[in-house]
Length: 203
Image (cartoon, rainbow, N blue to C red):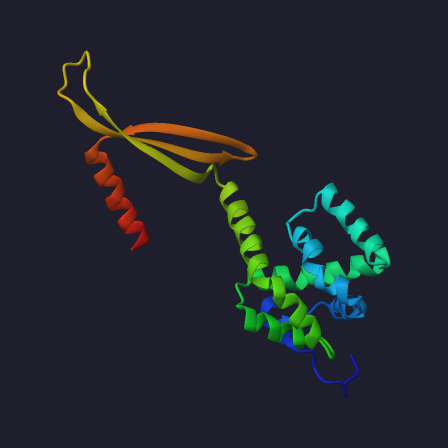
């Protein structure tokens, strides 16, 4: 670095470190896209934000390049730059205003890039953080996806028990890529225990 040049700005999305050297050059071509291409940017950027991209996403990138007459290499650089900054900001849990400020401080001339990326940032942040949280949970076992229930009254039993109500809870969970479920019969007393545990966890 030239000793006379100003130090690179540090960005909160990168843990108060400077942006990667190529990031400004990757983002700047976004401003050279046509108006319609800029307007449709998030239709192709959104699928590119997943931790790993599918073959379907790669095909969609090719179609976008042909539709808007963009060099595939240029589009790949733009998407790489957008993916880098959006994922970093989402995983750092930045709000939209702080994210926009970080983009503007990557280098000169990126104010309009910040405005374009803000259009889909909140939804992208939810997508990225949900995926990251699920990934962290999958590393340690099954992940609860949902709960369904119904209430039943048992009227007769060969155990001779008087009529009593029970709750039937079905827990839907993911085991890696498989969807599984576990159904439990729960008495009123055990529901009370579950509520007490939930209150403690949420409190």
